[in-house]
Amino acid sequence: MPKLFSTRLNEAIISKKCSLVVGLDPRVQSLPEELLAAAISMHGNTLQAAAAAVLEFNKGLIDAVSDIVPAMKPQLAFYEQLGVAGMQAFAETVTYAQEQGLLVIADGKRNDIGSTAAGYADAYLGLTELTANESARAFACDALTTNPYLGSDGVKPLIESALHHSGGLFVLVKTSNPSSSELQNLVSNGKKIYEIVGELVHTWSRDYLDGFGYSPVGAVVGATFPAEAQELRTIMPHSIFLVPGFGAQGGGPKDVVPCFNTDGLGAIVNSSRDIIFAFRKRSGDYKSRAREAALESRDAINKALGEAGKNAW
Amino acid sequence: MPKLFSTRLNEAIISKKCSLVVGLDPRVQSLPEELLAAAISMHGNTLQAAAAAVLEFNKGLIDAVSDIVPAMKPQLAFYEQLGVAGMQAFAETVTYAQEQGLLVIADGKRNDIGSTAAGYADAYLGLTELTANESARAFACDALTTNPYLGSDGVKPLIESALHHSGGLFVLVKTSNPSSSELQNLVSNGKKIYEIVGELVHTWSRDYLDGFGYSPVGAVVGATFPAEAQELRTIMPHSIFLVPGFGAQGGGPKDVVPCFNTDGLGAIVNSSRDIIFAFRKRSGDYKSRAREAALESRDAINKALGEAGKNAW
Image 1 (cartoon, each protein chain N blue to C red):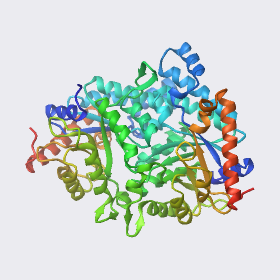
Image 2: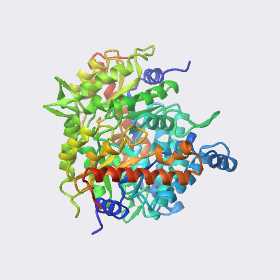
Image 3: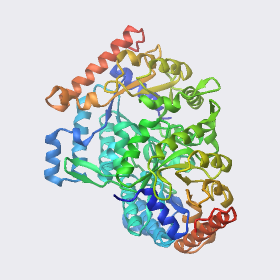
Image 4: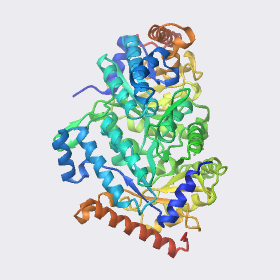
């Protein structure tokens, strides 16, 4: 029996003493100029050039932080916008990160129903069946984000595949953006929508617990709404929270503390721009600056957790 | 000033006298055996082979129905599950369909916020900026489906790009699947969530009307819930409904009538399996069977519209 995704993630968090994950959101306009220029001199001013620069950038970042963080979170939009070449760069990024011992969370917020949802599961969590006895790997990552608006029909095929392939799922519950309240904070029968979604996630997650008491079915809960995170922590005790909104989006180390359980586990905090584009603020080599920024963020989160008495190590 | 997407779609609907669109959901296991076998003999039992078979299948389908229907709706999951080769087949499918005069609606239900949402817009509706004076086409389709759970922050960047590139958007409002009610039918302040989303879509759509009185900002409203569709038709008078759930999912010609306005416009009805895999039920050449099935569905919808006094032609 292979390990559950939550086991793999929790073991990596504990051995690295780190709850930070790095978001690989390689906006072309923000890449190091010399990297882009070199790719353009080889491929012309094309999507191929941009994708080649992105892949090299990502490999450098992975090398810079692979001993620090448990996982990377590539945001699919930034690869899709580079077309087929971008998806190739995505696939190679995933493989490279996994070869360096990192877990990869594909942030695609994919959502659909039935056999279509199963198609996304094949693409990002499992294998694609070609014929009765032959399967192949499309973009096999370790976990995928998903959107719950379609209800259980959309999420259950993903959970099934995740469990089968030792993968994980993070369901959007309360997102970090200002307008997340438009739908997520509406009140129905005395409960906010995000609480109702949290309860659904709890029912989906509670039957598959690892030795740490966590499930491969996690939740996305933004760092920008600590009070809501506190509530949701109670509603979904077994789900690992993937926490966006830290750093550039405004959430600080203290804001993420409510996302954690008292065991010091139960959350991973994503930071993208502040790490991968740290060289833009501090100047110098992008890899060294990313490593420094990752260490600082890791330490700031650990310090805040320690002060709150939520220590895992 | 280029035409709005809704103008382009309405003109195609009227000139072809057809509100049916064909969903390109090429499940590998359901492809014609001889097509898959030929591809495997060339590429081995690989994702490349499956993608090559998918592309040939799609081209055959496009040839078979391009004079009948206004648009094709490829479902991205079935291309992503074939990896990079699948995305290449998707890109070539889009180009081929557009060359045959068809509009292409990418059914990806993409959703994210701010600059990430803008990345999806670049990928599927617009162009990707490489440097200050160079842009390139990733998967430029004519329209994209999106999921509203994140609120306005997620949808507005897509609308902006759609308007800029003469593209369209279809926002999930009330989906066709059984569990769609879990969240979409919850009641807040006396209104169902799908009604509230419908009102949001109305505010996003009403400022960009074409000569027919329609907007490039449309809505996904399932054929399986005709009473809800009736309500939503009133809430979003200017939005074109993309209607899934017709055929294989259970919705019949009469069920889709409430999605249309009295002018006979305002909706496109998607059918996937019943058209593209018609040869599995009727035997024979997949192209001829798809063409027959498309003509029958078109006629059945037109008949139901005629009987309801909703005639556009």
